[in-house]
Structures are given as C-alpha cells and as structure tokens.
Length: 163
Image 1: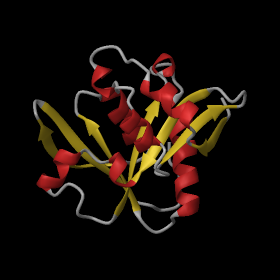
Image 2: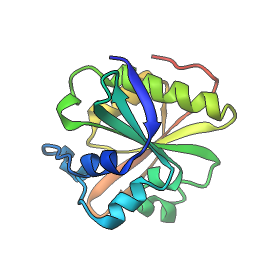
Image 3: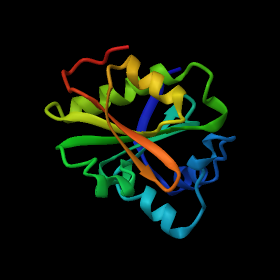
Image 4: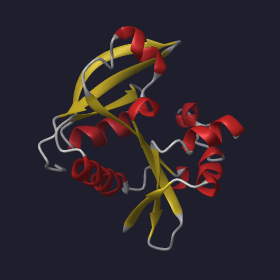
C-alpha cells in the first residue's frame, strides 16, 4: 500500500472523528464536535491517504500527541518529537502497521533530524507496543490517567527507520 501524507482538511477531520474502534480500542473513539475539528486542523495533524486518495490514517506531533495527564508525571520533560498515530479502524490488525509507521517515521526524520521521537500508548494496546518495539522504540516510563495505564516509548533519532 502506497501512502501519501497530506495536510489535514475539514473533510478528513470529520471522517476521522466518526471512526469507531471495537473494545478495548474504543478509548480511541472521538466525538464529532466543532472543537474537535478545530484541533485536527491546527497544523499539528497530517492526513494519510492511499494512492486513490482514500483516508487511511493520520498522525500528529507536539502537544496534540501527548496524554495531558502525563505532564504531571513529568513524562514530557525531555526535548523529543511527540508522535501520535491513528489508522482507520477497518485497517487495523491487517498487517499494514509496519509500512504505515515506517512511512511516517521517514517523513518526520526528513524534517527534524536531531530529536528523538516519543510515543505514548496505553499498556493494554499490545499490538501497538509490539509494532513500536519493531522500530526500536524503548519503554521509558509509566503513568496513569484514571484507570488506564500509559507508557512513553522513545526512539533515538539515528536517521534510520528500523523494522
């Protein structure tokens, strides 16, 4: 699957906000609202399409990729590129994750070659953690938000995309 990284549009934002994930991934479901659309259009989000311009996912960087509760645990004090990713629910668990993440990492490292990349993921999301470990992300710290445990994972930016 060839992927194309594009600027987020209102059409893509609305589509993303209507995606519905099955349990236990339903914590990633969003609510379609004006504020949510505005957040996705704030330039920290990119849309990802296939070669036919069908939306297949997105990524975001910066504070948008952080879990706010992690700030009180000092999870985000190191100067890293925070990265959040999302894939269309129908495509998850189909083996597309490796190529999807590789393309995102390649794009990011072309634009910021100096900083490490940090992801935050719920610890129950073993599928995502396994994918991140394939790319040499290392577990850094754990924190809680309500009854959900999260970990941050760091990948040293060596300008290589390992798989």
